Length: 240
Image (cartoon, rainbow, N blue to C red; front, side, top):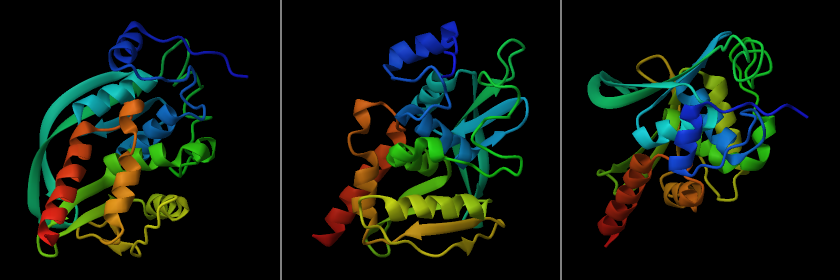
């Protein structure tokens, strides 16, 4: 049994204000850790002495900090749209950096050894197998998109990442979820990465399941859920 990792004053304050239930071990199987590591895989980087993860929603960034500690920085960035580099978008970014503490190491470990990622950058999510919904939600918020497709009046849900193996893992998680959600094969993006989308007909049911009861745990990005809800409303209005 692993020893409890002492929480910093910042972690305790964030956890109390957000009322987020987190385990003492950030690697233990738990909804909060599944959500955290989904985010890290989707929009983060793990090295021997630090973890950096980027969120576009301030509240979800605070949740990630409550789960694993670290320092948050906010900036506004403009970048190419992943599907089409001729389009740019400006958005807020909240970067959480978790460094190697001299006394406890990185998340209580010696360097990156023992974290759910190997030396080649491949993630191992076996510890979070009972919390696929939270893991998938973290992945979607880290490297996914939700939109309303005005041309067809449907909701679009897709995942975009440079790592094809990670997207294939996301496909496995979706295939195993209790909602039938067929998806496309991986395709290359114009920026050199990969992406796939959930079938439009299945996107409403999949998105609804993904965010169902999320307020009970606080493990979600409010802006992303609002985007999903607006897209669902627009699709319903299109059908009428």
